[in-house]
Length: 237
Picture (spheres, helix red, strand yellow):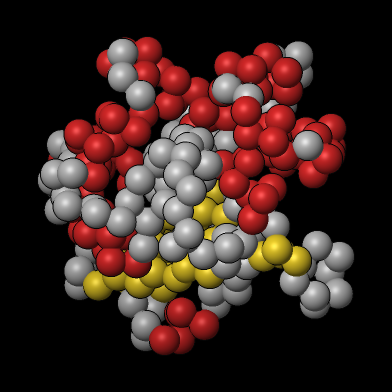
């Protein structure tokens, strides 16, 4: 699932009905559990392909991984992350809970492609708050702490970390489209980096770590359209 090779249908990207339901009644989507979302939008749909035979990103992979962790531990995903990552690393600005946090930036999107931005915070929070796919709130400082800890072996064994770095699939020609297990592999003038892009309706976050130097870069913006990151290659040469 971390390699996105499952072929599982993703309503957030593949289902016009889900998107209309989100727009027309965000409160209803926000109130639905992961089990209810799966029953309503995922289970009736066939796989896109046999697992392992192709690559297709699906947020449902992360929904299911979150439920697996909760089932094994008998704890909420927030509690698991607090105990294993957030608290040990002192990530004081990072959480997964649904919270009425007024310090979190609002999200915007160019819905009609005409350069005008609309506040899409209501839809975004209904879709991802508290969700294993895109629901974590954080800041640049905490992202740096997390990535440094991950790459320095504080969170996983050396064997598991190497597995995450192994290319599972290359789905386009962009430097951030070589996919590992939960990581993207970047080829730049500054060497090979490992990181992750995350985009929701109204926000985007990127973090990439370069093992050869220990350098990192992070990009966070409250406009959900994927950003052009080609300038980074020239910047890091």
